[in-house]
Amino acid sequence: MTENSQTSQKAQVSQTSQVMQNSQKPTQKLTYAQKAAQVTGANANANANANAGEWNLVTKKSSPKSQEIPYRERRLIVNLKNENWTLKAMEMRDSVNNALKKAKIDLIVVTVAKTQKGNNIALTVSEKYIADALLAQRAIWEHVFDVKSIKKDEKWHKIVIHSLETEIFNTETGMENLKTELESYNLGLKLITNSIWLSKSENRSRNRHASTILAFRTEAEAQRHLKKRLLAAGSTYRTVEYRDYRSNDQCQKCQTFGHLQNKCNRSSRCLYCERNYQTWNHKCQLPTCKDEQSCNHTIPRCCNCQNAHFANSAMCETYQAAQPISSQKDHLVTEL
Image (cartoon, rainbow, N blue to C red):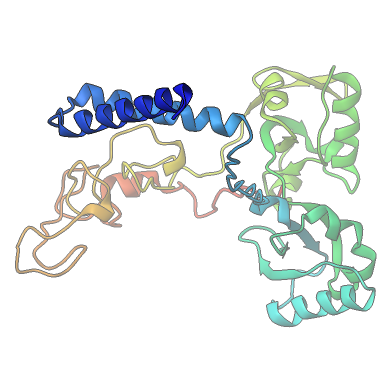
């Protein structure tokens, strides 16, 4: 046996002996800190291997959410010439869609509805379209209606101009002339459309002065011309904030009169019992009663006059005082 062979055998025996000695040693219990260090080290090694190209971690990309088109941007308002008409929603909708389909226009009208105020019809396109597309194709479908005008359903900001001379402006072209006068002699004033009278035509024929509504595209424009005198027809005229409610309108939040819930900054009062909560939270105090709103067990109490009736009762003194003095109601035109 050569000297090199003997040296190699001795090294193998020594290595085997060392392994046997290590295996006979008792296993040492690791602390939480040592375990955490091992996990951290393993993660670091894994990250290093990934960076070295040994592992490729693939993550699924989240698809961007489609942005929903606001409801108002999908509506057109069609003003009709004839006031005596009957709404046939399905028939009108299908007639518009058939005209668009025949012209190979990729548009769908989903609803046709009468607006609450004014001689108007609202057309709403499906969720993936905007009203501008339908307006651009009006020549194809407007024959379905007796159209006077068509406009987008935009939120306009309004003010009122008082004491206009009816002799000058209560004519066939009076509102168009007023728009021209206001835009010509008031710096930066730009109206969206012609003004609308607040009073009825028979009243304007008897009175020397009347008020109209001015509509602006933005609130900033309306505020700029609010509570200042505007120039027109060689005179100046006072402006005030436009309010789309009457003195006898009752707030559903505080139950008082002269404003609406969306303008209310008062505490909530119950319509039935005057307690400090919204009316729809009213429940009977008897556990056995299953009525969700007012029932025979409710003791009426008006928060306006403190008498034993509901806050909207015609017997209420506050309710009676809020009614117009004359039988003629205020005529607030809100078709702008």
